[in-house]
Length: 411
Image (cartoon, rainbow, N blue to C red):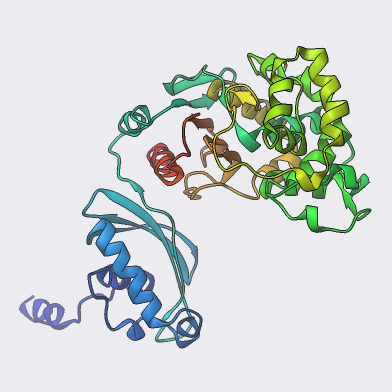
């Protein structure tokens, strides 16, 4: 027995797995003056991101968040790549992806830092942060099933401006009316909009399938794709579906504007005033006449909140959870895949293998909406909206609070 104990004592301590060691080594370099980075990173990485640039980035993290107090393995994407959670001494967390080169002495060839978010101890603590924001917030986290079961709410029935999240209603109309995904549409000059997106730079007449346009509309929030699909689905048809899709006040979004119409109206104060003072019929006449006649070259993005409580697309967090539940029940493979292209924020894939997302923003407006499906089959709807008609929003702060909710829900 003594011989066995002596032999065990002489054994070298077990080695930490390379990925975990690399993550801890990176965490240790988050200090005031990072050093010896060449020891951690592969030369191919350092050719793309010089050590001096890395030193500056890690030093900034330390200055803003303090030291890393713990490193937790979240998931392994590959044998050579994994995601970790870094906890910082100033009360934030950051999700970090580390990728190693293959070989006996692996070094880091990939490193990605997600935005830091508050290390909230509970979802209620995150909601308290939202309550303190200037303006109005509408939030709901609900379990989806035979009925929608609200889990956490903050003004869930308050209709707010939602920006590009309105594009979900166009996608729903295409699905409900069984529009063929392989149908070809050609880009029309009168339906070319402004960014976001890139199709506004494409040649007139370029052919795209409905599926391609829908994917760009949702994943890239391409406004030109959106306006073509709104024209394809029909404005009045989208308006008629909003109520059945769960929007409690669909009249607030009538007429259902295209993105270019919104740019033209908000870019011309006199025309906007005339439009807002008109009744429903008058507004449609203004769209068909004066608004259509405004040259696209005169339309421009707006830099400050502009009539966001009167001229927008509107929905509450409860409305959008009902919409995501509608998509869940339809369970259409094409639409599910389109919604999942861009997950919005950092989704813990070990907990939520599926994340369907659409968000929207403009000055004074922010919305983030998900359909999340857990590994055990449980589905969730999560929608968070924030409006402030007085000034632009601190989007990173809101992203952080919502990211905290997602991570706490994953637990």
